[in-house]
Length: 338
Image (cartoon, rainbow, N blue to C red; front, side, top):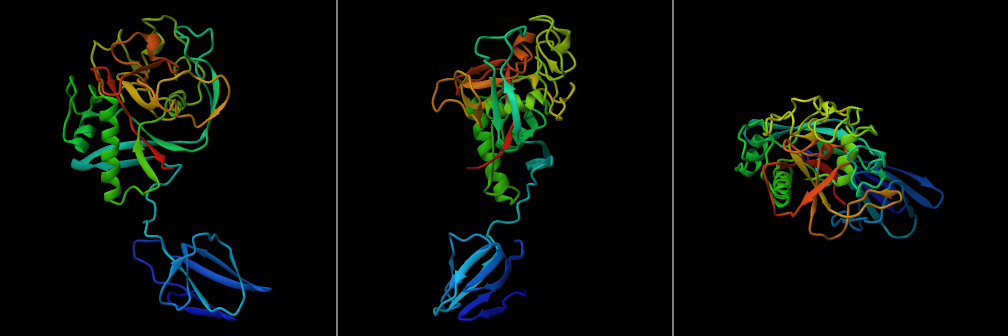
């Protein structure tokens, strides 16, 4: 059907409106089925009694049925004001930050996994109760920890103690990390690269461990368990920790990625998560977000100054949301907004 064409079915009229250039072209078709007019459409369905003043049919979904009668009504399909979503679920993406800095995001499919550690895992702590977690929505997670160059591109500052554009930003609090995510969300939405359906934020603790494990059930995401609590050679291929770091951070991405393409999930800097710290459940949960309130925010992955046991996939840490130190940074996630 062409734009601005009016069609009539008995005493009911249909018209298809013109659309903004940047939006997807809507479609509208109809058929008579007994006493009903059946409208199939894409976009937003509007109706009018005079073809001048239009209102959205808020309860409509395609196909939409209208009983034929004596009242004259016009219908049209209009494009949403929201541009075609630039994010394509299922695909990795590269975000262009101010100043020509790039941020690489890896798509993480929805799925289920066992969170926590088995009772015989070397280095296990009491709070790592195993339980099944179902994550019903896919999301994007930073390929690397947020670097100093990326942090400065968004915020204009760099609080890090160890200086280097490709080093992970550190000495940032949970509050700082969330402020970064909020600012980046504003920048990307203003540029038309992020729809209202998504936002940048920190991953939940469950999202973090699911992505870290990348299908593994071992202490480390390279399929290995630790052989020593402090100095474990199994850590060397995948992370910077106390025995191999020279007591400092290192450029992101120098160690081996996990099976899903994520780097430095073990060591380098500990990574803030969205959740308040709390006890794990003992039964299966879906899309957990931790307690509603608390005093400690979760941080995961261990860092350059810690023993191997604190860098395991299941190891849990945390601190007050306004605290910071040279061992803590973060990586960003893009998740659907409720």
